[in-house]
Image (cartoon, rainbow, N blue to C red; front, side):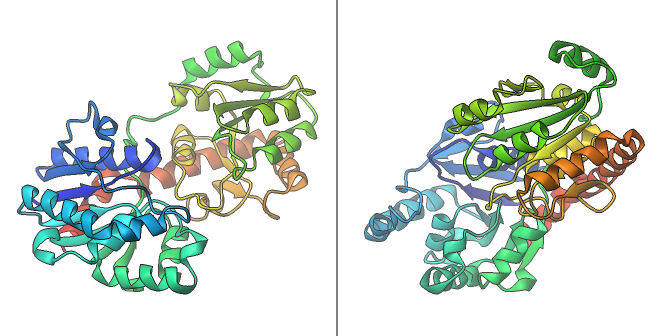
Length: 367
């Protein structure tokens, strides 16, 4: 049993926040003692993970760095009090850059073994100059770094953290629960007006400018035949994307689906447009477990998740004609879709086996 304190302060309830809560809940179920220090206690609602609320100021950014520096003495005092109250702390699990930098200034008697969880590539601004130096110096204090993907690992090492400290540990996913649902496929496709022979493309995404969903729309618009594109999500770019797709009745926008498994079962493949800072997109993993191939419009966030023979990463990156050609190849080859979907599921079942993932996490936390 290990006494683990996870420090994760943020201004949003996103993928990394929920992934961390799921991880802590699983570690608790294996007999470890866990505590989440956060400014967003609602993120742990219903998980059974114990929470202590802490406010350590704004997230580190270009706009906030001066304030973060000025408030560092007070922030360190708050962290020290919280860790003292949680003592004995055998391992500290840190998720964001501000906490990683601050913990490098705290004594080991308070922090125990320091482990970083990197949920995505190191931001480009931290890979050069003084920010890179600070990140690399903080990395000396870390005993281990869990990188969510090979691409993320490469950026951590490139930013100056010793390669022997960095290990790829994928997201924790309940792989046995997620599978193809034939009943849902028939029902959902009927709701979408898609026939049994229609080629249905799914896209689940945040509609943000850095995610090139415009490329997905343009590529499908250039694809002929009985084709449907179901786009699920929301975001600042939704209105612009809807306007871009308005001339093509085969493209439908849907609210984010509570039953992602049913949505994916209704699709013949998933298209994903990763952002430049993508880590290991959960929707790619879910699509593979359902047994459909994934086409990514670029390598960032997809490399290491889509192996050869189990999907496609388009080149050139974010190129609509290249994506149209890839979609046409899958449209015309149902046997390939079945073959690659089966291969994707097998690979993901092996790489995301919960026992393997949790054993790796515990080993890194315990040293």
